[in-house]
Image (tube, helix red, strand yellow):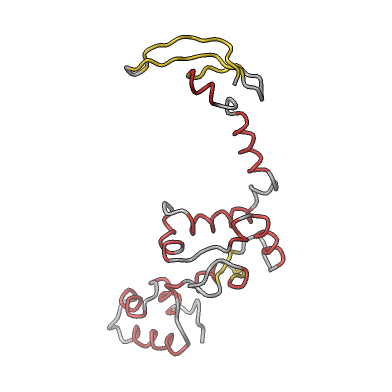
Length: 196
């Protein structure tokens, strides 16, 4: 940036710091910076702000529900600070390179049955987020497909119902025995899923 005026040095937190006024060559604003920083910096920050704003608006869809689905999917896979990470990225599930960008994901979604209110569903629960392993499902359908909610067949369902009817098992004990959620056991016992 262009040096306009040297303001001299002053003590900041016990250290001498040299300040100056600079003119940004991009927006022509005058800004105060440390002397060395001002000489090095190419702009006052306006260029970075403009690039950031452009990245958010390059397709104009960052406020859509589909964009939220895509962003949430990426967070589950790529952000170790997210609670859901341990069940997704933390256990080795990945996203195909093509879907790291929103537009290819959006195009796939619109050509493969996406409608508002549907959730992305991995067909093979241990598989990755990629076109060959994903489709769209309602929340209820998606819950049934979760890894902790796998009941293989109607025989297991009937077995669960028979064991519960004996009075020797609680729903929680059955959930532990079959490696599923207590909620799924409740659904089975109340005929909300696996109806006869």
